[in-house]
Length: 588
Figure (spheres, rainbow, N blue to C red):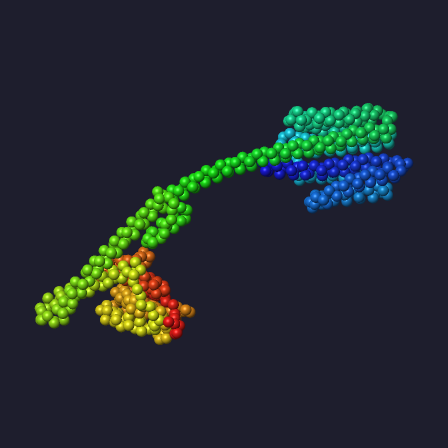
């Protein structure tokens, strides 16, 4: 509909230019006939020829003014060609540097140029592609066929006037005039057909078009009869050239009058169509608006129902579920709908928190209850293995040594369980203070020397930064580094070196423990800092761990305002690191 509206508006825009161009063609035909007579008849004054030339100049000027107000370089260039050609003819006629036959031929060529330009106007404004059938036939008749018919009549007028002025006509001249009359009749028959279709397409609104056309056709018939009766039917001419010219001019002018009348009718048709399309568009827009409002109301109702079912905004519900999925049971859930999804999630959260509390209490209780007897058992086994309880057989000492090691492992597990429980509930207090970093690294390496020797590996310390200060809990940072070193020792090959490096970067210090052992499988790397996670719990070298060391290390480093991480490649080795903020020498 929008496309049809734009189409009709563009058509209507072209009608004023078509009218102006028709006026130029009519004035050119009048000047052609007058110039032929002026060049034949030496008694004719220049005034008549100059008056007609001025009329044509005025018509050309009117069209140029329109183009200035409605700039179009393409149309302006095409029109300039016809104007230049006209000025060339006018100069020759004014100085009588051309005979009447040449004048007539050059004027005819000019009119054909103007008719071509008229067709270009019709094409440019898409008048010949009118999508409405009732307007198309009228355009076909009045804007394309009628001007060409008027030009043939103009040629008949000029040619007949010349013959009457000469006083006789040869056989060839009569044959040429007859050919022009036959061409006009052929055009007239085609015009009859188009006008008939235009009227039939909308009978009630086209009666005036048909009646006006019949009057014009009557003028045409009178002119044709005059040519046939006064020139073709007579050997000796009795009609004066002026009478013939005047009678034919009446017929030609009636055609131009009908062309302008048709353009006015077209303008009315297009205006009516544009108005109708606008009303249809407004009706369609109103319908779309109403439909949009209905859809909006339905959508709002659906969204409100969905929000009631969710208990809150979708993104808020997603954030809550994601937080609980990641183990954050302390997130606050706010919802006005207890029976909604969020309401049920809140109940689930409360139950999970209660279960977590009971689990923590159970682990804490069991761990504390186990620590006391394990301490006693460990002490007794140490005395026995140390020989303080007397001499024992070798087989008994071997069994007692195994029991002592397993007791130490149980004690380590209980200590880790207690640490992770305190960290999870936020009850593990750190003794933070600003202190040198290197003594902590040295202490961790020293304590792991015998452990590393058991696996046949060596611990090396990289570059030293004696004056580097950090704000940490020394015992807990040592615990983290010992965990890194023990893991590196367990997973390194015999004879390998483990390197512990410290490096300073801007406001941070980075501590790395690098090994060249088995590396961490890619599928396990995302779980490396989770509780009770071990690369291969069946591995005899890894079986001594609890699976809590790295989880505890992560929590401790985060509480010391640091970050922890690793890089690893399977079969190449691993690098575990912590980054801690640097402290000034005078920091408290």
